[in-house]
Amino acid sequence: MSGGTPLQGRHALVTGASSGLGADFARELAGRGAGLTLVARREDRLRALERELVERHGVAVDVVALDLTAGGAAEELRRRAEHAGRSVDVLVNNAGYGLYGEFSKLDWEREHNMLELDVIVPVHLTKLFLPGMLARGFGHVLNVASIGAYQPSPLYASYSAAKSFVLSFTEALSYELRGTGVHATAVSPGVVATEFLHVAGQTPTRYQRRSRMDSPTVARIGVDAMLKGRPSLVVGWRNAAAAWSVRLIPRRTAAALAYRAMR
Image (cartoon, rainbow, N blue to C red; front, side, top):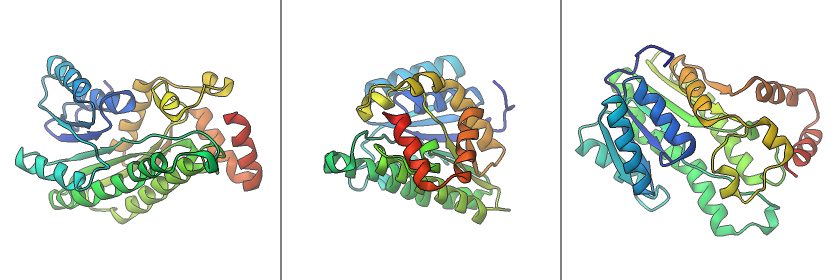
């Protein structure tokens, strides 16, 4: 794979690693020589991925089946890493999901869980693992945002707002970390061929079918951006052009365009 071997002998922790982008981030990092801690709720899928990575790349892989929104889960994850003797050099905050529909009609319990997983969990995990990276003078935090972070997105109102938080948090953190040897990167994909739309409760629109990218490509681009120390990156030139063009139009117009694209 591209990017050389700057991660050879390093250890990465990937949340939401049971499928989609999380699994492909794990594959990409293992292919560059990093050991892995795979975190998700579905242990059977994690075990299958563990076998694949060990057989294909010969790296050390730990599996942690854990609901990250449960009380004390983040601290438990740190304790397990310390008990296993793992110094987490790369933290990939990938776990998360979206909910499609009018805000007034979405179930609050699911929406609260989504906001917890998309906002609180990545900030908390970064808070827990960042000090060790700073002490060692090496590390990467890769946060998964979304093209929806760049504009108000009706029908994904709270999800896109959550991803706006992730983007802003990561870019600010990246600046704070300058000169430390530790970097923070937010990668913002558009539509990716994963389980996202099914979980969100949306039938793919024509726009989504035409613009979606494959997950392994998005993961490779994201890891490349991370290793270059980029504060943020929109994946795909069409998505990047759309995110840039939003700056040139009124925000109400941007919301209207996003609404049309999601229907």
